[in-house]
Length: 211
Image 1 (cartoon, rainbow, N blue to C red):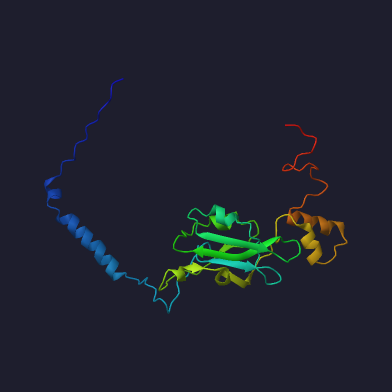
Image 2: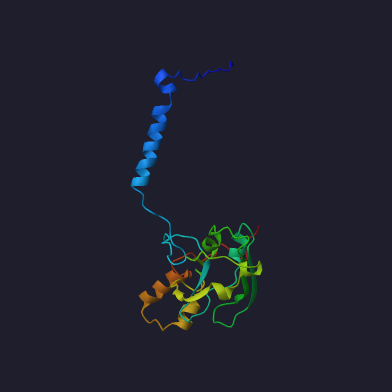
């Protein structure tokens, strides 16, 4: 199969175009228009704070639950999802009803973090969000490693279930629900399997199954 070659030739300029003065004058006119219609866009930081979009990815925030506690259950999904390995978690047993673990140490190294938001997407408990703060200046490297005490903000509330499949937590902490319709609503929120779902758990096959 023959290869087709197309030869491109530069366009020939007229004598008027070769003078280049019209093009230069046109560029100067555009610059003059910008000088006349000049509107300053510089933000006088830190006296003025720039208004950020709602989906801005700033320093992480840990929202609190109804009791003002950290929602994190140390599942380490955010640590696995982090592409730069900036998150380090050390778990410890939890005393809360229905919660097995909690983070003893939760650190994010902002010398590695790229603010991609993968950790927020991976969290099943809504225990981590991207905040609106962007001041990260520090005089040493240790100041760029933030702990859970820095991230935790009890003023930020989350109404998501504490863990994703814990109906007992809702029933034990909340009020007694006598109405069957209210019970079904809570079950749908927590992700607990109801009688309407299949009795077979896909993650735990029956004992009589032969492979």
